[in-house]
Image (tube, rainbow over all chains, first blue to last red; front, side, top):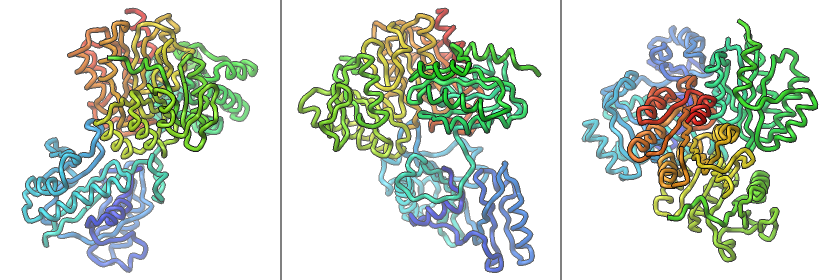
Length: 351
Length: 286
């Protein structure tokens, strides 16, 4: 789960990492000017899109808040606006800590130039966190940033970031920019943080709900073929194979391991919303999932969803025999493999 | 070196759970020697012919344990894997999905100084048709033979195996390394095993968008693998930056795309396919 800036900063502060003074806007009259207003959207590129406004007079406050609440940034409009003190910036740096896939460890990553253009850089410095103490890492950062006077502050920052990452089951914390103020304080100007959803069971997380789904992704809303599969790999492979066969897949859908009738019915209801839909490919290879449960869901969908386009079904694996029985009774055909599903689907599709 | 996948005495951790019990029976039905299982507090019960114990240490008082297959829920999985490592079980196969990433970092550190090999987590396990079914790969869709399959995706593994079986091409190994970002055995370790096993004649590698694993595998193949390798990378039409299903499948940069991985594998002498249908045809035609 990706946190919004204000949520991430609340987490930072609990790990004693300095952030600007600020709060969510509830009563504009209480804000101290000048103030920085920041749209709280779950996406990057906010500054460039006009999602950050610096306001120095009271009469401009309400119009600015209204503008930000209406401003669509990459498909998102904010539920909240963060108001912060305007920092007096001497310089800006980039700093992040993350779980690195390739080294299977935690990495600290830095760049001398922080701010919105940082992603154009390729010369990031990185250190394996487990191989050095925070003292050494903080010293290295001070050398790299050329901030010898900030050595102690950077050592504390590294130690606190590391604790913050592990204690909160975060997979990534990015501070960009890390601001050095005119009075020589290091402050997290902005923060992105991703928490590991798998660890939710041991935390009392209550963050804004973000409409990000991993298992149902629209690829082409005007596509003529919907796909339903189980397992991310098989679901991607089903989309690839549909393309190769000349169909235009509307979606990627992984109903997951242990999928049951209810989850499948929900999926059908979403799929039939696609306007140009002419065929549905169902490709299930049951392992943990049980094929008979899938079969029951298909029967139920056929009964309850009136505008269901033709289904091309491939079912195999655990409890296949029971599934075949259920579908045969309802005169629903199971195809022997994915290739035959695609060939048959191709025949019913017309432009 | 003995082949850890051919270990004789198999146990199931979490054997009295819904998945553990169902799958332990399926493993027994496939002829795998599931001698026992663990569920703390349920010692003395039986699941089919397998005795239930509280701990692995208790089992080891009665039996040598060669392989443990883990089905415990995610929140207890770290403890279960560490228990198996501490018991020095040679091969640990973890089927459980949704284990927190920081738990896996702890386990990985522990593995560095241990005698155990971990396959998974979030893996369908391994199937050696006629020898061992270690996990949830459906044995009835397999056929004994000489092909070795390694994959990051569970169901795509089954799909490939079933496709080959349908064409009469049997398998020596079917191994799912799991879809998680931090995992045990990787492509490299599997390729090493397949290359050194004289009974393997061809290798099928199945990958996905996201990460660098397949790129590293390509470099390994170029240097060390002389047997024919066939590959398919799933997700040619995946949108960038969107997580597709499990944690590992997210397209971060162009380098991690299916197109780029396919290109690099092809340059390393691998025969590559654009879809799973295409992959089966390539192997059949070889």
